[in-house]
Amino acid sequence: MIASSKDDTDTKLDKFIVEFKKMLENVTSKLSEKELEAMKFHLYYYEETKRLMKIVAREASQLRPYIKSIKNNKIDVFSDSLIKKLEKHITQWETNGMLKR
Image (tube, rainbow, N blue to C red; front, side):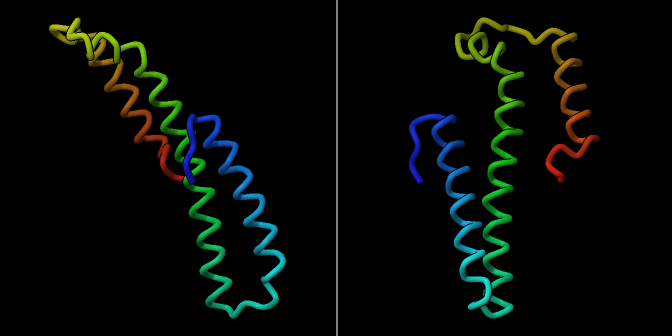
């Protein structure tokens, strides 16, 4: 699946998940238990990919204000307040189990 933008990727992945669910519904009765388990795992994988994409996009948007300055070497020293702010954000992210369902 090749996409030219985040929105394009979201749209294609959404459509793919919908079509995968339809296909799974149509073939479920013909699958063995192991095959059904494998198909359900694939569906879970695609849904998790979409969920994680959203988390990464949200987290990246919070860092976006600093990226240009860092790329242009405009930040000689990270301020104590910036470090504390980022540390707090990361701690909350870990504490709240952002990668868990």
